[in-house]
Length: 70
Image (cartoon, rainbow, N blue to C red; front, top):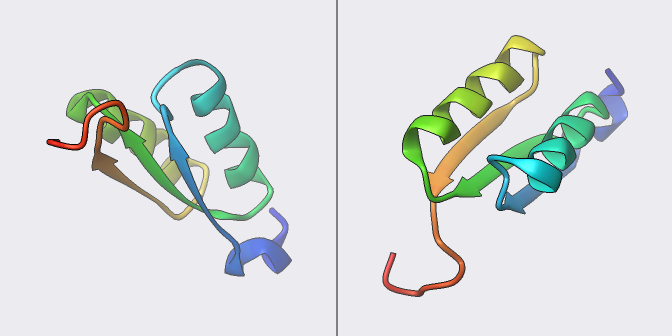
């Protein structure tokens, strides 16, 4: 892990599947801290746990960027 990037933080919307999930893991492997945003609490916690297992600092927030009520 690149410890120089520990000071970098990345917010990824749509982070629970597809390109967003892949981006979270890529940035995490590069040493960045990750904030995941998505609509599904269970999947968000699962992805966060996977990242923690790789020693990536990560957190999840439930959000739907398509709607401002949530």
